[in-house]
Image (cartoon, rainbow, N blue to C red; front, top):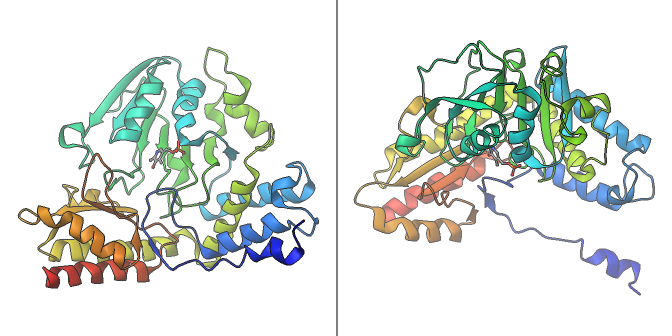
Length: 371
Ligand SMILES: *Cc1c(COP(=O)(O)O)cnc(C)c1O
């Protein structure tokens, strides 16, 4: 038998302070972590853990309702749209989107590995018109000047390409319903939701721990396909039951609500955008100034403000491993670039404090002096 104090002793965790630049799962606000930890102990004065309650308890239904309402409030989502929370990750959406929207044909923009995966799934349902691609340059830019066929059922984009550090930072105009994977830039800036048919993403980049997927859907897009859709893969099922058709990911949804509350208290997405631009600006300025490094995205205007990719400049390639060790010794984690790009990637999601970006900039400057 464990005594009460033994049971709880392990909870006095002192986390070593790290600068967390991981691309996903990634840094979350301390507010989210602490409130979720508390609720895992005892949720809503029920004398039970968040992990052992019914998802249909009124206390948890309130959590889903609040999270849905805050989603709508923070993103200024207009009437006629639903917000749902699902399992399966953004990757399941790659199939759910064509399953729910495609009769014959859809248009896709190929901006990276995630876009390619979504294209692969869509091809199972019909004709896919890849209207633009940056694969020729390992996805180091955002294709422009393409035409979206008017007979496409929808046009799919990935607004932020987590692996390559490119981002579509404005709301594109599309003559057919626009579908956007915003896994890694949702809540990083204000968006005009009315320009989109569907916005979706896994929560584990900028919102919550892994396990919950958000989908924002314009209701009148549904019910138009000729084939039948399995119940669990039909958006209408989850809209009708307000994310409660089956057991939703309870703990990640609770955590998402904490992040949404934190976001609101911080001043919302407009304020976040200001801070994110400032953080990204600090780091890009150093990348451009420091002769040891160079940005890996070809056009300045395509640079992501969430995932900042850089490599060693010509002549300095041999110092890559040393810089990695140098930064690691200074408490930086998660700065290794994705294997398909190499170099470094610093993810500067909402929860990353400016101090962490400053610490990385100083490490880059100190490394320059050292070698
Ligand atoms: C991480 C990521 C995904 C995959 O998300 P899962 O939830 O793991 O399926 C999809 N798209 C983008 C842009 C991502 O960054």
